[in-house]
Length: 370
Length: 181
Image 1: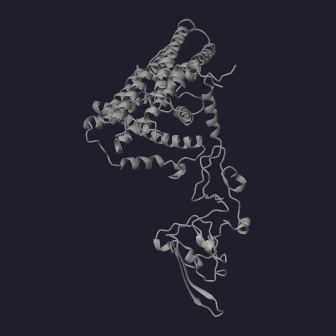
Image 2: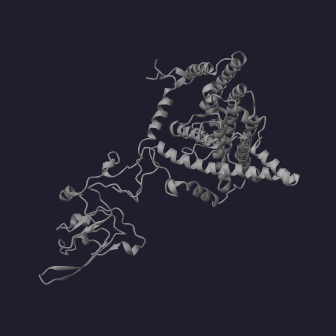
Image 3: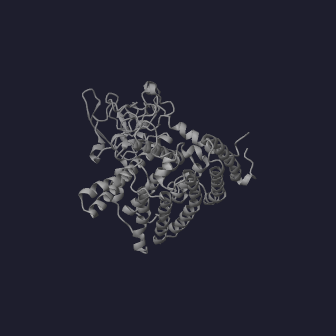
């Protein structure tokens, strides 16, 4: 029983039925929203400072202690900017697109288990819900590109949608591997079943899932469509003011949501010794986000053809092989000691990555690398 | 087994940026921290020496802008006494022609680079303001004797903790402010 249901049960004893049903829901939503917004602001700060340190500079450190209020200043700056809508834009869709991008990101948090019982709704198909809901933002991005009446934003939207759809497949297939091992689609059940974190048990699945989600949320090194150091913006080129802020928030909300899901699926969620569950959860989420920032600080962007070939020639076959391997292990080796599976899977992951890396040599291997 | 063809470059890059995390940042937080400038800097600043100046107004003639205004009267020992020596630094381009023209080395380019003012009237410097002081020091440009006495320029590459900069703990977020060099 989740905390929310307990609260509801408690209220049902003293309040009329409809109030006892509505009030806990609203309280839960407000708590989760506050959690998301606060964490998104902290994420923006962490990204700026950490990126600074990766580039041997300081990052913003003036406003407040260690610059912690800088994201708030940024938010205020964006909010008071003029809201410009292109003359020939499709006004309604132009207005609707940021909402369609942002709201699904918030909806993901309904099934993120912050603690064993601290979850908004413990859906029995939780991870399917996450996959379904997070795909909606692709529609919002396409709406933004289309309604802007700008050929560049439309091209960027085409490419973004292509990218998100292509990377959806390997991500879902690697999720299936986790679900096979956990024996459940519920997020809490998945965490409960991780005696060894699936990061160790399914390293290949983790790598595929992590890179796939990076591509899905348009983060570096897959952020070629809104490459902020090279082009203006990509699909949200015609957006300004609050609407742009929604895209910006949605982007970081996405990063937060996917950090939470990676933590849940592969890093055994809230579990950990000594510290309370919420602390462990946050530690893991920030560790995942730190790796994301680390990759952003290091890796150069891919070209669009490299991006697509990486999805279809590398990630998808590897995801299928990974799924096949996990299924085989579950079918015939389900009684075996888990640590033997760990060894098998780590070795298999290393061999597969080495084999597939041959495919991505300079000039397909025809160019001699010194 | 060589891993050059197996994507080892990605790992190398990741390791390099990870090492950067533990390096002190090279950022100089300017108003609080300042590097020592070059000894031969041509700052936007002039220094005028009262005792060397004879009031000949060669500098005023050399100035292509006509920025220097000199008013003198004849003193008791058959010399010029300078009443007024105003330089309009707002129009000055710091070409240094007045410095080169001066036969008595009474003018020198200064070292300072922080001479912005909020009002135009404030950039017209009088003879009291132009004299040698703590904040108005001559640069070593074309003056080897002055140059020899000036502090060495602090470069970012050897700006180490002994010289007073880069105080950063192992995982500290910021340098402490106000520890200028």
